[in-house]
Image (cartoon, rainbow, N blue to C red; front, side, top):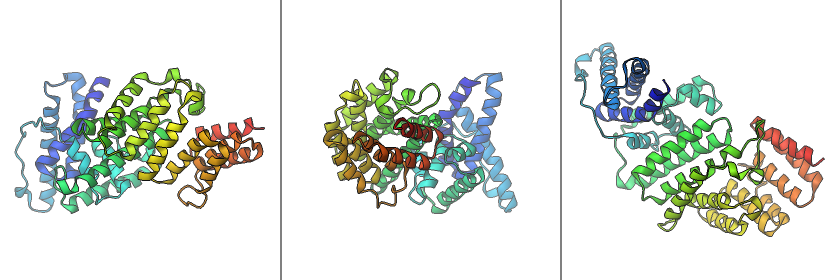
Length: 394
C-alpha cells in the first residue's frame, strides 16, 4: 500500500492541473481527482499499477468530472451544454507549477493561499491542514471553499502569469512556501508539513533553476531542515543549536544547500531568501558552536535588514551583535522591539532577552525573562525548555 501512496502524492497535483486546464471548474475538478485517487488506492494494490498511472488518473477523474457536471447542469436544466467527451487523451504536460501559481493568486489572502496550496498542490486533507494551523476542520473547510470560489469568480486563466505579473506572483508563491516550511519547522511534530514545503520548493526550482531567490529559498529550507535530527533529545526535550550534536545533522542536505546558495549568490540581485540561506550555511558549516563565524553572520544580518527589516530579523541580529560586541550591546538592539506590537509579547523576544541577560551575568533578570517566555510559548516542548533554563539559573 505504501508504494501506491508514495506514487499518488506527486501525481495528484499533476492530474488536478491537467483536468483544470482542460475543463476548468477548479472546485469540481478537485472533487473528481480525489475520487480518482481513492479509486487508485483501492484498485492498484490488488490489480497492479497501470503502465501509465498519470493517464489512468486523468481518465478516471475526467469521467467523474463529466458525471458531476452533468448532475449539476441537470439541476440547472442546462445539462446538454456541458457533456464532456469520454476519456480525454492523457497529457504528459505537468501543470503543477501553474496550479501553484493559481493557488497563490493575489485575489486571495495569504492565509487562503497557504490553505489552498496545501490542499490542491500538496495533497493534504482539510483535516490535516486544520490541525497544522490549529483551527477547527469546519473553519478550514470554509476557508478553502471561499478561496476556490474567489478563484472562480476572478476568472483567472489556468496558465502562468504574464510578464508584468510574474514578479508579484512568484513572490507570493515563494512567500507561501516559506510560511508553510516555517510552520512545519516551528511545530516539532509537523515534519511532514516541512517536507511538503521542500517538495514544492524543489518543484519550483526545477522549473526556474536560474532564479536566484527560488534557489535561495530551497537552500534555506535544506540547510535548516538538516538540523532537525538533533533538535530534540530522546525524551522529546528541545535542544538549542549551540548544544546540538552536530554529527546528527544531515550532511547531504547541508552539502546540497551550500552548493545551491554558493551558485545563487553571484547571480544577483541578492534577496532575503539568499541572505537567510547564507546565514544558515555559516551555522551549518561551523565545526562547533564555539567556532561559529559570528562576525560574518552579523554582517549578513546587516545586509538582510536593508532588504527585509522585520522584527524577527532584528531579534536575530541582536543575538549576532551580542556574540560579536557583547551581550549588553545586543540587549540595546532588543530594546528597540519593546514597542513593536508584532513581537512585544512574543515568547521569542523574551527568550532572546533571557539568553543575553544570562550571558551578561544578570541571573535574576534572566530567570524572570525565561519564565515570561515560557508563559507565552505556544508549544509544550518550548515551554519545557524555557522553564528548564529558568530552573537551571536557580
